Length: 189
Image 1 (cartoon, rainbow, N blue to C red):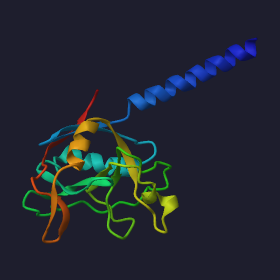
Image 2 (image 1 turned 90 degrees about the vertical axis):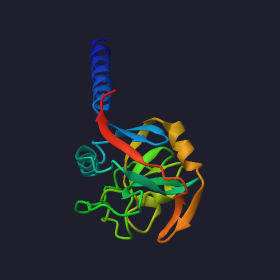
Image 3 (image 1 turned 180 degrees about the vertical axis):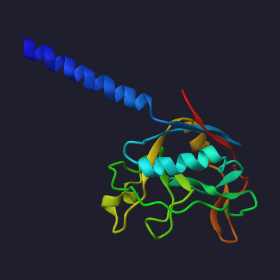
């Protein structure tokens, strides 16, 4: 009986520790012209990516950037261009953390990058469908690093994915009416 009591106490302690860790996960509020999206960041599984993202958030980098690529059934992408489609200067690229076990499922947040898997800087995307084809184990390259998930504002993501898009010089699937990030701030809920 004592063994079961001790085992029960240990299991309760593990469960409480896990809930405390989850409660400590940083959250970022992204206020857009279409509403607010709150994302929870996974520091445990993507520490360098989360650190990089938070540096951009805390510096005010995302204010005035737009969602410049919207593909319903796939993803919505932001974090690199202003309303005039001028790119913003970024920090050094970071090393991919795509082997972290997180999958590109609907409403997860991942880093955008170029062909080089270690070229992610400021741009991120929110998956609007299950995109396991972007995961490392399903690709010949590194895949795309998931580092968070939408915890509030899924309806805003759904509104954004449904906007009318067009092509402009150098851009495909760009919203006809710009969707601007008014602010991105670390919040405690």
